[in-house]
Length: 202
Image 1 (cartoon, rainbow, N blue to C red):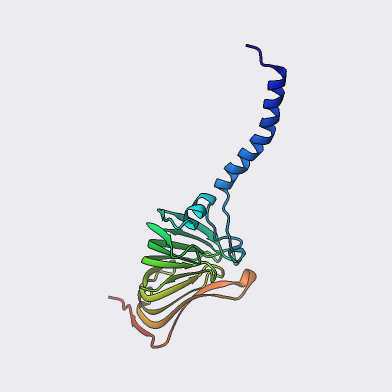
Image 2 (spheres, rainbow, N blue to C red):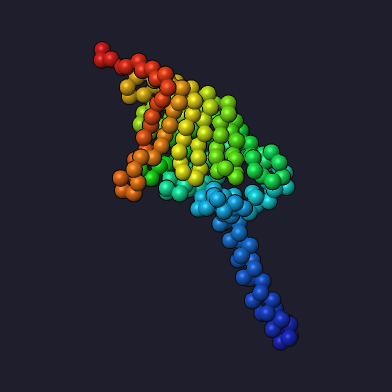
């Protein structure tokens, strides 16, 4: 059956409007957005994830990716994340694994049963402690740990770790940036009541 010219023209007009809108809708599910400019360029949720969290719901097995202002790449994988309130300023994550690939080539993995994502402060907080594994060869546990998702700095309290030197314990632990530009480096440091049991050759 031949299509009425008027119907055909109307369909073409609708497609000209509908297809770009459909494309925008699809792109909205691919590109990531954020409600807090402070996380630019990196801490984001997809539109669908954002809508679910804003409604007070939860997300199972989310994968959250981002980048710090220094170019460090991080990824967060959790069993579940739940907003503590509708304003989404504090999000609770369970069974979290976070990976930081620093622009200097070093990396760190943080594993914990519970963590808090503080949106406004751009912090990932582990109030009940965590395990940290670094590319420098250290594997340790801490009583508390905080990762700054804007700068990539990581600090914690009461660390017990095994590494290249042997066993190290300290009240304060840091992964911080030294220098800038091409001279920038990520340095592990231990402070306050540092105790080291050196590895000795057999």
